Length: 486
Image: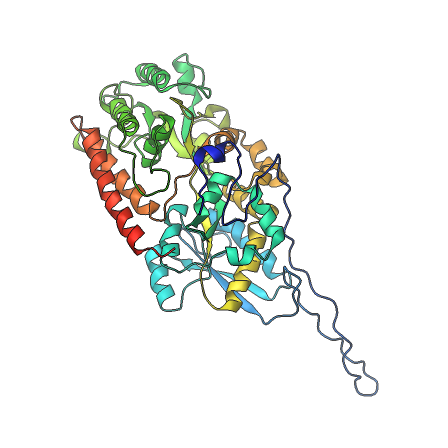
């Protein structure tokens, strides 16, 4: 299967996924998938006894495809981070989805949707083997390939090829997000939502340092000088436990810097890890230098612990710039530092090019009985259409996977309330990317662990660390290629 290159995605080029997605010319026209409606009235019932009226025949239920009446089917969602515990309880990530499920269940469809328990990947694999698993799951997209390569997922090609309306709407997804739905011709999932990590920035600290907020186009070197000035005026590092920056040691930021420097995580066909290239070594060294050479970044947690220093916090005013994701928390964090007027979201730095990883979650349908699979697709096509998905992503304030959602009233209301989201929107529209491999979750954690160890000490070889991690991942890729039957 032809995979979309990252540069094709960013250029808005044609995307080919199992032959379903045609080239998108200009703004896509989105076909809104309507809610199922009640079917026409059935014939009159037989005449009743004298003095009574015969009952009207029951209405025929009509599914999303206009099908005839069908037997009731219940489909269940398990989630990684949530389960439904009733109104007034915590769990902001489930409230918007519960509202959609309630709307669907009141529509008269023969499909009843319920939210089940919290499920980790291991729990779901065990339940699936016992034929007790859910119909849907929305894992971190990096882990979606775990289920696909084990033969647990429906190939959505089977539904979409017979559903022209939905097939046409695939052009509305960002191609680089949709690329993470498939492998070797099998279409395993749909992008559900995405996100980006960018530096939340305390404007008061910038003013103290006589600095203006950074605009897109600033370089790695510009950032170093900027952070040095912030560090000098805001605090003196370990003595005050105040720092110019935090969060760049996260695995996401290493990959962002790698791409900004012209490097890649995998080679073109995903058969080899190549992040240990000179571009990757330079990216890792840049992070390391912020900690030890320039001393403008929060030290590794073990270093703080050894010196008896508590972990500093952006929310408590101890860190000026901290990498954090697009989410409702931006409002809470702003309140902690003096309000939204004191919160700025800094775009990504640039070296050879601008990049910001867009991660998030995908929506899966598990194999089950034909009736449950068809019912699961009916609900899925409705949930992932523009209006319904807009309701959900606006409720959690993560970035949408469809372009058209940015034009909905619900998203516009969110951006009016929190205009800082525009920087996240620009990141997904203009320079976002998503790495992809069916074993990406394991690879991501392996590189994160390796780099985390690297940042504990000033005396370390970035190249040796990355070489060791890449070699281990390449062994895993070889095993995957030998075992996966695409």
